[in-house]
Amino acid sequence: MDRAQPDNYWSDSLKAATREAIKNLDVLATPDGSLPLKHVDGAFGTISLDDLVSDRLRVVDRQTGAESMFESADALIAAGWAID
Image (cartoon, rainbow, N blue to C red):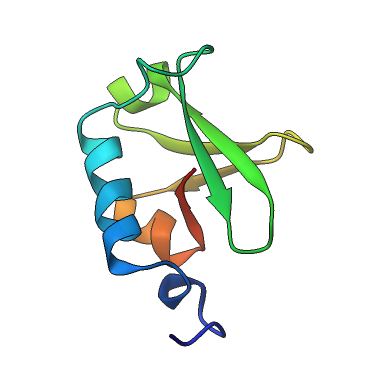
């Protein structure tokens, strides 16, 4: 596995699970109603249910509050994010 490229960092099964979680709005099991994510650099983020329902992939960093927008699940994964 090529760890130099963020989109190659995660396994194919985790990438597929990330796509499915976004597609299926898999946030019902989380206490705050958001989709938890992890980043290759060790950061953690979330996508709110409101954003998922509105087809907005806006990741909010849990520590810094920084926001990143993505046009697709593939773009989110290529940037180093995956479900946690």
